[in-house]
Image 1 (cartoon, helix red, strand yellow):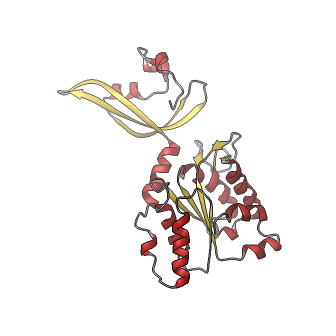
Image 2 (cartoon, helix red, strand yellow):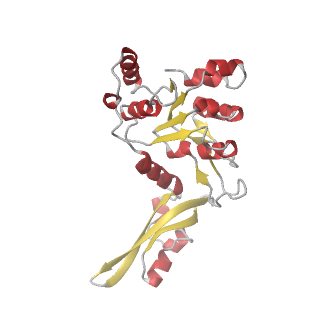
Image 3 (cartoon, one colour):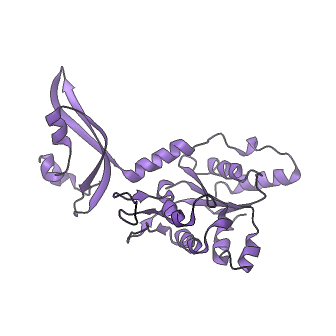
Length: 262
């Protein structure tokens, strides 16, 4: 599937005919397994596909019988890593401290919309637990088994924010990995992205975020093809976005798109 090769076209043929770049022959010749090797294979259309390959030798009673190669895409491995590093399943509305009327209303409202697919805008002063609310919403949603990736828009330099969110293709800029890199939108597939300090997002980036939300598609920096993405956005800010709109510092159309539930 990853290389677009039909099983009927591959069965009974040498691997070197189907995937000339395969490391299977090298593993068999050296009689050593190969693990987590970054490779560039070509699919049925001749397009380069960047993969991480693992080859395990098959032996019986000390005799080498053959080898099995398995591989996965860079994107899926990045996604798995982010899910493992950023998962906090303990966050819940019950664990949010506070029993005032305002807090009870906030928790009740957030709990009610958790299973909705809508975007959410959380406003409040710094230190009031906006990310905790975002994690609780994610953990109570239908996306809870998938990644929750927080992004502090004020902590990432403006020139890097686009590539962090949308990824980049190989050679997109000086210092870019030759194989390219998936962005947070791809890594959060079927999950939730928490955009903290959304008010600090550069104005030009706001238009690209709006397109991603409206069309469900992104383009990597330096890329030319659209990539479909399925993510839920929860945004947060301690700023008055309505005042920023009047000052031409925040896009009104993005505000309405984010503030579906606030």
